[in-house]
Image (cartoon, rainbow, N blue to C red):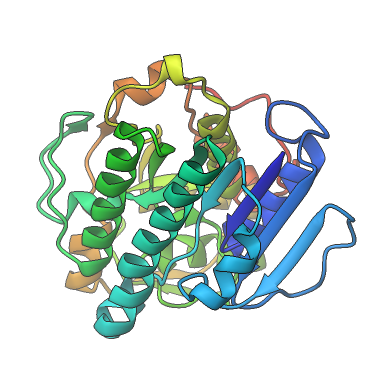
Length: 327
């Protein structure tokens, strides 16, 4: 099986690659060729199955050589983070919108030549829902993006679903929340505070949080996120609804609850609060979210808040599957 991962050098992508090499998609060893694409890689993968290409996925000269032969599965993770895309709108449009649409079109044309549709798992975002959220949300909640990043993701979902309807692609889109705990060098993410709380608590350092203790958000660890991406790739077509979009289950928790769990794990640390209205509005007023279609399809959250802490900081499983995760 030939598999392509865009954004393969990033926080999510690098761990996904390790899982693919370890356990495959349907079974261990079924990934015979793993094509990795990102702007840069920290270190080369010492595995004969791996081909790494450093470059911009939205550039034909970077992408076309990787698609000279048909690919079976694609994980499209590459994008410009939302805050950065908002600050650099032309570049955000080029990468997140036109680059994604060009990738899908290139894969669809490949299907016409080789007679089979690639399975495409698209990392969409809860940013498609916007900021004016209802008191609770489910699979029927309307997408009303308030940032360019959310618009780009929503259009990507629609176009992927349309190529799927026409039989040229086999698309599956996941609306992912902010994933924790990103490394400190991460930038451009408006939800960065969600990870910074974990990292500073682990080191018992002082932290000033840009949202209030009562701020509520949707939480998911990197390991759980990868569980859900792989599950999307493994679903048979008979298990998919027409829209091919799911919002995986999340833990809906306040910042205060997260801090309490971190104190239980690491001991007390100094935390202050200086709420920034823009950040609290976008990332601190998220209501309960239950996508029943996602739950019925087998997508999962981290389980409990204490499991989230362990999973987010990879204190036990080191990014490998955890049997404790549940709906």
